Amino acid sequence: MNEQELLDGIRRGDAEALTRAIDRYAGYVGAIVRNIIQPPLQSEDVEELVSDVFLCLWEKADTVRPGSLRSWLAAVTRNRAKDRLRRLRLSVPLEEDALSLACEGPEESSVRQEIGRLAREAVEELGEPDRSIFLRFYYFYQKTGEIAEAMGLEPGTVRTRLSRGREKLRAKLEERGLDCETAGQ
Image (tube, rainbow, N blue to C red; front, side):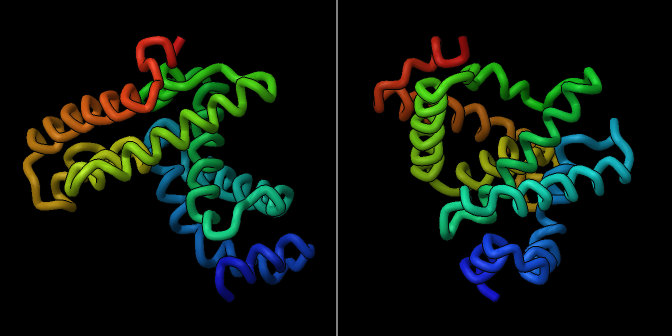
């Protein structure tokens, strides 16, 4: 089954389609959870969060845009894992909350979506290997040492590229009219 067939099946309430989605994406979802919450939480917590993500998929499959299942799962996974850490009063990696807006209503939600779209576009415009380093660190929560080893770089090089990448990203967002100084307030 391809992604669209999986989503169509889940939307129709086909448990087999959900099982296939779990088989295909559970490792991916689990890796994101582990990168965010371990070592503070146990493997049972990882399994529970993975299950929560797929329950959310079952309940909200109609909100997933075609071709975006993997990124949708990643976003839900990151949010669920960060929420779990907050509930346990543990720190959230990278304190992403400082970069996001507190959204409560539809207007704020559309602003957040627009900021997210602009940020994704700006990240896509980063050249390699900066784009891969940036995504591995901020999206998949890999440590600089892990990134360095996987990409054959020195950890110091990874940190330097992250710093330069943040500056490039800030400049690109400001070019598009986003005031990065007030976006986190």
